[in-house]
Image 1 (cartoon, helix red, strand yellow):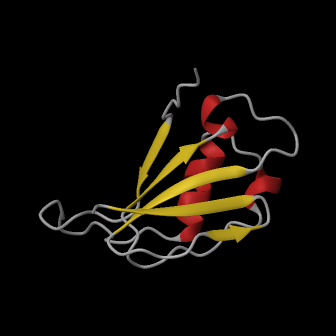
Image 2 (tube, helix red, strand yellow):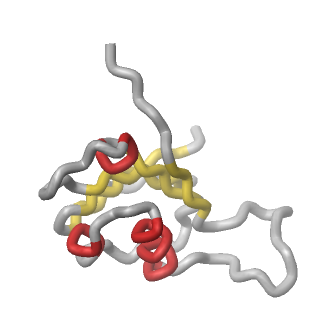
Length: 102
């Protein structure tokens, strides 16, 4: 039996009520890429990282990159948390699927 293991959760947008004065409300693509590089994701995988939808609230990293058993040529799988359904994004080695709260 396969058990998924969540390794990383990146909050991209702070929900209302968690706002602190002076803090940035939305995180940019470059901010997320820097965090992913810090997690050990190869720069060649991140080179094609797409722009994120404005309404995205968080990203979960899953698959081989999250498990720590990625090999050269492995892609990057992310699950984006959004309020309304939207199609997946595929850009180079980066795949972002979206999940709604409802």
